Image 1 (cartoon, rainbow, N blue to C red):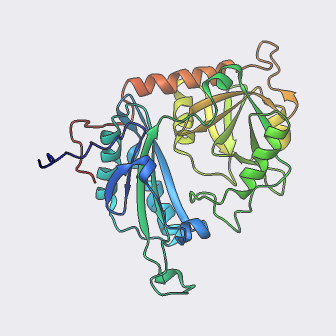
Image 2 (cartoon, rainbow, N blue to C red; image 1 turned 180 degrees about the horizontal axis):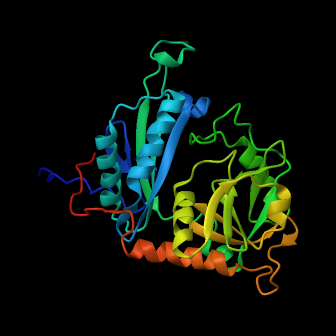
Length: 319
């Protein structure tokens, strides 16, 4: 008796889908070689866009920033913008995730000449993946207001690393996170060597003072959610602006909130050991302006603001 032929089981993309080395695979199967300079030297750039209720948010803005980072780090992926857009849509469609964290990555790759130390001898790679939605600050912490530690280590100088190019060089952020968690805080923000506020570990920072909403003008990524928050200020009769922010400005703020693709607008309650806000009702809890901006941000998402719909019926070939 001969065995009947069997059909290979359909890959499980429910926990996430990746595109790597020219094909789609379940996220658990995505690998890069240990000799890739993206791993050995953090010689890579990336960007992250989110999908909410089946729509990408500001995808073209994220692609613009990704292209700028590629140029800044002199990386050239083997796919163009049109192909990248299609690959990102493909990862989401395969995973069938309605709310997703979607990354695009370009690494330096491996030298094609054995022992070479010339970046030009490497073949650059492109990787993309979609995961279930991620909150940098959990919803529970957002509800009570995040507690932000002030890191003792200064932010890496922009003279050494342009912070507007998205990168994996997180040594200063990781040290700040260790400090924050050692002291029982949720996350951390960093000042530069002159004492000006920059950004946190994966997020931009804002303060509210009266009707002004201000975010630092240095040492920070030009966040897409940061841009969105500034645009929304006008709809609430607030003055949103980018300006220098010293430590004393942070400590004297009526409110503080953070912004990021993975979480949106996230209210805070403490900076260092101080509660935020001169209004006693706002102390040690999210303030009214932060909550109003957060509510408007997600309302606009539901209305399709800057949205690009994912076609879940157009599942690409894989394997």
